[in-house]
Amino acid sequence: MKKISSKKKMFNVAMASALTAGAVVAIAPASADAAAVSFKDVPANSTHAEAISNLVERGIINGFPDGTFGPNKTVTRGQAAKIIAGMLELDTKNVKNPNFKDVKTTDEFYGAIAALKAEGIISGNADGTYGQKDPLTRGQMAKILVEAFDLEGEAKTPFTDVPANNIFAKYIEVLYANDVTKGLTATTFGPKELVTRGQLASFVVRAEPTETSETNTVTAKITEVKAGQIVTSKGTFKIDASGAKVFNEANEAALKNADVELTIEDGKVIGVKSLTLNAENTTFNAGGVSIPNLVVNADKVTISFVKADTINVGKNITVTFKEVKAAVVNLGEGSKLTLDTKTVIEKLNLPANAKLENVITNFAELKDKIKDIIKNAVVGGTVTGGGGSGGSTGGGTGGGSVTPGNKTAEDKAEDLLDTVFGKLNQNTELSKFGTISLDKGTAGNGVITVKLSDSYITSNPNVTIQKLASELEDLENNNKLPSMGDLVGSYTVAQLQDISSSMNKVVIKVGDYNKTVTSILDLGSSITTPNKDSIVKELQNIITVNNSANWTLEELKKGGKASSTLTVNFKDGTTAVYTLTIK
Image (tube, rainbow, N blue to C red; front, side, top):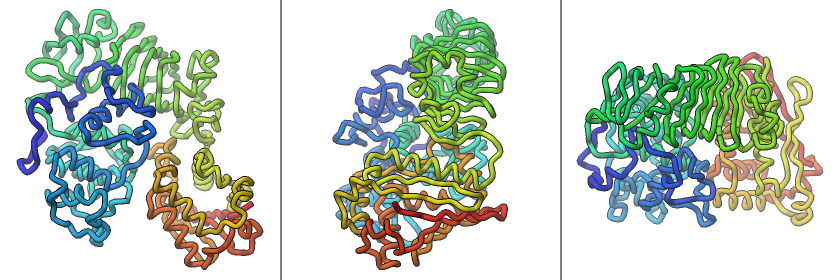
């Protein structure tokens, strides 16, 4: 059970009963009512819509003036401090200065940071800074949530990327024990991954204190469904009108011998954590209810009106989806899907060597609409272009250009660069300056080409590097540059770890400027994450070292100012050198 400290202000009973429970996914229809506060980029069926609406209505977080919320934008440590302080209703006015070197009393997040420091929720960095502009990682978030809400619990997690000696391991275990997180995948948590605004909203709502009533989890097999009750191998439990949308006579055939994990309170079902359907030739209509983890182990099953975090489809079976909303669908070997146009799958994991047009039975019918149904598709752990036109073979408009097959470490790194450059080129703000592309050339040698926009050069014939840095700083300050999450979001954590672990070091050289990191991903994190100390800082360093503040882009196009290379040393002993050219 969650422990709530007396040092933190408790929400009153009326408020608490109205909030979404942290450790329990309540049975409730996924309708427009779940998002009373609407944003253009947060549809009612979004995974985070209910949590975002919850926090906005309470004045804890806000959207942007253009009517968007930015659920995929990364969150800084300062922004997170403001949200947590708001959740706890802490006094952020009458505070003691925590004396962090990088937090001035006039800063926007000063009051929240000071209040959290006084409560012992945050401690800052070893160098005396807090890093309020740094992006928040999932590991850091785990610690803040546990400290903020005094969560307790012990559980063995399945996360292979969180070893026991990880500094955030114990906090991640507590979140897992309290059902605040299930991880990025079944086996990864991603402690170094950055947190988005949508994710943080969901995490804090799940973690916040609720009415303290005794609940327990029951894992059982369903034997019978009857009016107002569900009979299982672990006993008979009552269901209310909302629960009856799932457990009813119409679904009885589909629910026969189904495996279910229920949250029970006072003998009544108040939540469904997971459901495994084992009956063939059946139809299951969830009535708009959210079921976090749904498994289909039977052939010729039709699933309709369900919202799920993960749907796992077994091997060699065919399943039909109707108006299904799923964050992740994992398709077993030899299995196929029949979809309708109202289904939305954020990420579809296909078996190795599978093609989208072969596993979607009605692909030809849906071809023109597939990008709206399947946002990203991954073959055997490899990005294939997702829902873009031509996504089944890679390079579609909705994703990357990586295709399955045996690839060297250099191939994988180049595929990643291709994907990142493609995303950068899609950014409307950066495209005004020009485009960037990779010519892989021969093994060990390649060319990275920056082609400056003719219109930009024409409009700014004498623009200097210093002026360019200032323009990029303005874009950063207005959150108009893509984050690292935006650039590599089509990759799984396991894929990124595989690429990163294949490298010894990466060296970027621009004239006399040298920067060495352990992998391309580290380079991307330092340069492409949108905060004032990232891309602008690196540009200013390059300018300072090379005394190039007054160099013009036209002069750079002519060459001779500074040779630029990106060198990657791989652990297999190979080296790849990419020469930077400007046209």
